Length: 130
Image 1 (cartoon, one colour):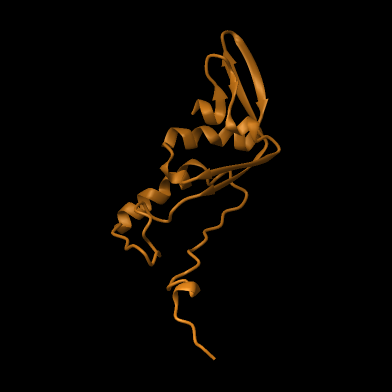
Image 2 (image 1 turned 90 degrees about the horizontal axis):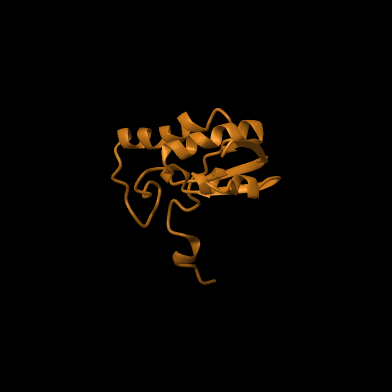
């Protein structure tokens, strides 16, 4: 949490402040602990991080474009030709709910992108000889 938001004993900058006026990319965002996802909400809404340490209070800039990626299911196999998915519908809902309840209200844009290859990739298919 300190690495992402900032703070600690020395009041160090976190990734959100270091990415100020740029892009912060979080891969596998649904694997983050819920309290970490929740602490992103206020900085994303306000564009700043308020820190208080040792009687001092200061504000760090945090205007970022948050781009996040994650698998569509906990096992990572749904829609993948190389592995099968054993996740139940209940597991899928619980997995996706982690992001919906934590951050979806502050996101400006949301886009779910499916895998590109539902079949074997073109390079793996036999090609016709003409």
